[in-house]
Image 1 (cartoon, rainbow, N blue to C red):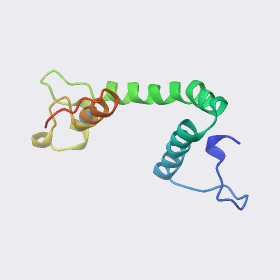
Image 2: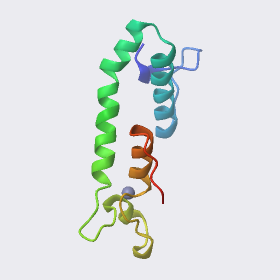
Image 3: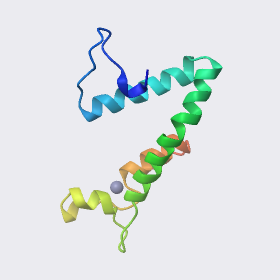
Image 4: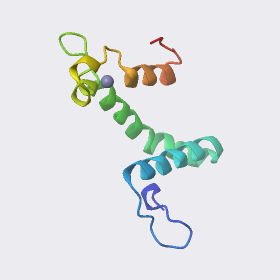
Length: 105
Ligand SMILES: [Zn+2]
C-alpha cells in the first residue's frame, strides 16, 4: 500500500483535504521511522526523506528576503506594515527544528 492510499479501515479511500492528507502522510513517515523494522525505516529514508528535504528546500527558498530584508512569501499575504523581516517565522521554525537552534523573535 502506498502512503497516499491510506484508508479508514473499511476499504474506502479517505477523501480528505490537503492538510489532513499531509498530516497522515507525515504521521506515517514518523511512525515507520520510529517503530518500523530496519527495512521499513530504510525504505522511508530512501523513498520519502528526499521528498521531505525537497519540500523544505522549496519552503526556505520561497521565504528568501527581498531587497529590503522582508520575506518575499510572507509579504504577499500581509499588509505592507505587517511584513516580516527575515528570517521570518517559517524560516525560524525550520531552523529551530532542523538545526536545533532556536532563534529569538
Ligand atoms: Zn516568510
